[in-house]
Image (cartoon, rainbow, N blue to C red; front, side, top):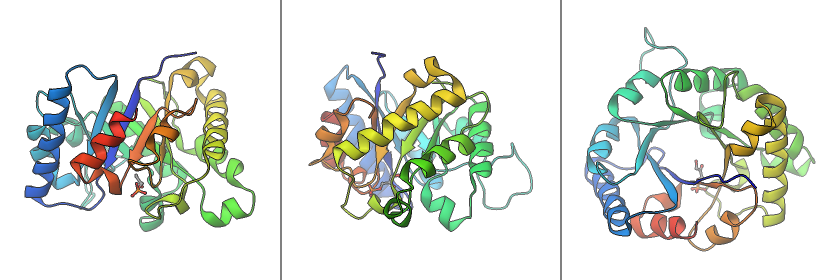
Length: 252
Ligand code: 13P
């Protein structure tokens, strides 16, 4: 069994202004400092405009900060976008790419997601590459096919366990309070690891962290995080309150 360090990641999405973002980040940083050595990594991904303040608020706590997206190009005429280089410069160590909300709202394809992941990795960031089936795809029995083709298309050349995290987020489980059964989650995660092995080799795939995301909360986190191929969580709603997110982290 390969040891994979659990990653508890909060995706704040488009929530929070300066005061609440800083309060949330400092509240978590205080918990981390009080806990001393922990056996998980904690990551928060605030809206882009809050990154600097959050980086300052978590200084010295061991927490990591990440972006929720980055552009595939290093710089240039891309109004409104954020480069991976700027994320790195602001103090980020991770970047989420290919979240289903970006795939839907911004028509991001697997090829775009792969290019963004490569851009993040080129800056020394860890790319958190999101995949997951819709409810219609699950109902049609296409869950494994969809996740397999997203791994094939969204994971760029040069990906390793050190620069890549996969987040399996069934679209129908996001923000709905519904989750697949534990057996279903484990089945998909094990399948994803197998598909990843075809792409980056069995050794790297065995070391790569695969997070579950979609209505993970203080009540179901312990059961989900105990599954053999679940190496952490990507948490939306429950990452917006210090106590909820900390309880999830404690379940790791
Ligand atoms: P919820 O935890 O709110 O379902 O969101 C999950 C998610 O999309 C994290 O990226």
